[in-house]
Image (cartoon, rainbow over all chains, first blue to last red):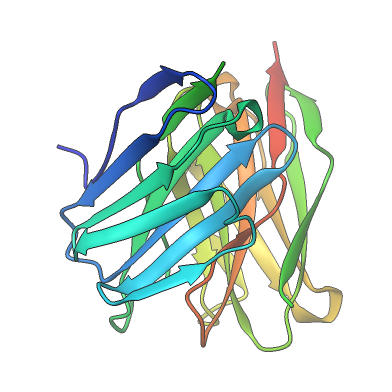
Length: 114
Length: 113
């Protein structure tokens, strides 16, 4: 099983609908992230959380919200989806423990807003 | 503020030729630097990382990168390209004191037979 699991893997939704993307991890990491990938723009940080009670906005948080339900779960919501939110979304995790530096990524969720 | 610049959004090389993907960073403090690879329809996989232990870093699949502080660069190389290397490559930076990862815009590598 994957260490970082995103559900769903693919989703098509209509403009104006609310949608939630979910992320769960079995790595025991305390820090979790949501990124958005668009062609030619790389990965841009939407929100990040350093523990259950700590939520921070990234560079492109407008139109998104998040919830850290538990250390292992971090969900991303689009309250009212719009077509320019069509993108590939990635969840990532890392640990604040010593000796760990890199982020670990899920397989991604491809979201299409029509 | 941290930033990462990847020169060349698309790079094509012949099979067996040298691969060179460029990455320059800006950081006010010594950073951690990473190269990730993304194969089609997959997530990002770590290729290698620089954490100040050694300036020449070896990674998986024959890739390596050299940290050059004077040039603020962390270019990725592989002596001989293989067809299976075709993918998108991302350079990323994280300051040692923070846990925010900043990514470049990516370089798509095409390997020609």
